[in-house]
Image (cartoon, rainbow, N blue to C red; front, side):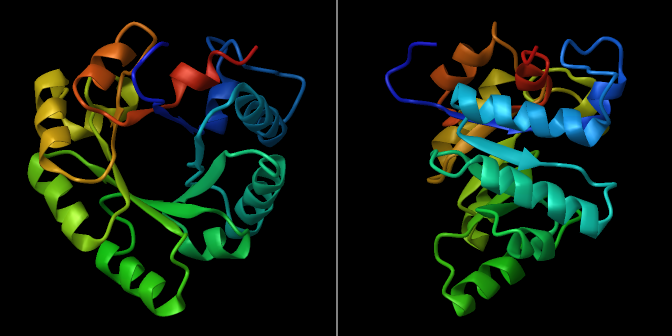
Length: 212
């Protein structure tokens, strides 16, 4: 995917996809956690920049074990492991950062904790669905944002109609932190996202379904 800058590629995990027959990555002989671990290892080997562990329904102990294994799988690489919502798990497993959604811990509280703790390398990201939310995330101390859904996708249907490329372009122009496009991103439209100013793309199916 030639481009004048190297885009950030973020694989967002969904172990339940391995239970569905329409997923090329599905390995029905293995438990979903085992299949997910293999997918993470493949993503790291392929050069994915970030991996967001987004397994919201896993209990803390199992999630911590998964994140620790994923962090171990990235040793010696430039890949970074981010944890969705759970600051306690991210810290216990020595992850590179946390990704916050609309119902997560307040961004300002996490940013203040980082300042007080001195963990300046700990990454904080936020999901945004409007220009106003993107600007608020930047003011609140986020290091990057996900913006979307840019295109139609079942996993983001709850957030309303797709934002489209022009809204993505406006957000990228307005904020001074990296904005990654999310929602319906595929091989055919990734270039349009980058041309609109996105620092990269985040997706579940784009990466997970590509893992044989």
